[in-house]
Amino acid sequence: MSTLSRRQFLGTIAAAAVCGTAGCAMHVGRRAPGKGKPNVLFIAVDDLRPQLGCYGKSHIVSPNIDRLGAEGLLFERAYCQQAVCAPSRASILSGCRPDTTRIYGLNTPLRKAMPDILSLPQHFKNNGYETLSIGKIYHHPSDDAPGWSIPPFRAGTFPEDRGWKGRGYLTQQAIEQMNNYNAEHPNMKGRGPAYEAADVPDNEYPDGSNTDHAIEELRRLKRGGKPFFMAMGFYKPHLPFNAPKKYWDLYKPEDIRPADNPFLPKDCPSYARTSWGELRNYYGIPKKGPCSEELARSLIGGYYACVSYTDSQVGRLLDELDRLDIRKDTVVILWGDHGWKLGEHSLWCKHTNFELDTRVPMIVSAPGQKNRGARTDALTEFVDIYPSLCELSGLDTPAHCEGTSFVPLIENPARPWKGAAFSQYPRGKVMGYSMRTDRWRYTEWQDRKTKEPLARELYDHAEDPAENVNIAGKARMKDIVEQLSLVLNAGYKHARPK
Image (cartoon, rainbow, N blue to C red):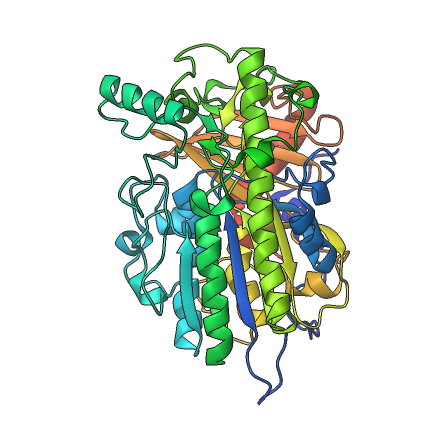
């Protein structure tokens, strides 16, 4: 690849987005005056990577999310802005990237960081919608009072919520392990074993109970006749991997395979890795070193069971929309807030800029959609959700939004689109900025004050989709690294449809 000037290369990125949103006729989800507004069912799933049948993982039992994929548009290459809960959700619900929200960790609610922001639910509320939050939507349960018509409901994973023991543990053995762990680690209350399989009905765990409540609310909303924006947030497959035994029984232990690349990418910088402390905080997980193969299989099986448990709850919601005869009038969007590692790269959990952590499942089904069951390879981002739901619902998009409506992709999934998607992850005084293009994942670890690059990563997804070898330091990649660095530092505005 020959060296290009900054302007030439930025032009090639922009050329990938010929005929962007401006001037393109769009009819999906549009409502003519007097036709009313569509409802919105906004389904969030915590820690869900594209580990679903509809994403080609045939060993996963996910018939209900697969059904949604067959009814809507499945996004093959959607990316979160930061691979940890609070910043990712803040970016979706504010429409702004982490460097705008200034939320990089778990301790800052959106309304503390941006008290005057017009949030996504608030915008719908201001436009005549009844807005509801059930389960985990924001990381902080009481965040965004201006956004909700009624107080948020959480049959939660915390001890004070609805009387659940600890973080949802139900078996006596797990409760004893949790109590012993708490006695030894007084600052980590509620951290029992990393998984549990109680032989109980779905609603004995929080997600099933939250779904019961959501179904009751759907029936009430149908009677009221007012358009609604229902945000339904599922905890699982977030740790601990607690799900009713019947979902564990869907998977045979001997069929569960540990990751086939349990090693760090060759030549990756130290900034790229984590110590997966989130998992190590649970009972029975080694404080140092790798998990045994037996433990890895149990953890992976628990993750799979939780995916199937959540899938069943999604099916209950979709069935209720059909039963109430409001499915045809409802936009349904399902998204996982970030990816998750299951032993790949010798790591677990999220907290990195790798493809495994930043790539997310996203499915959208809209009234009037013609391309049912379609897929798109277009590069999309979570900040695109806010403007997209506005367009699908006939609302103006607030000027502060930093994403691009992907509604044109619903009509033409193969059309040219963004040249890149952007994510980031902090490491103390260093920020890792990562960019996914059609072929490359390029990451710069920059000093947060000086912006000086301290380390780089480059993965060739045409040759190395598992990101096992960092080739940023190879002499033959010098020109490509320089060109990608220009685009990364020029920012998302140069890679969006124009």
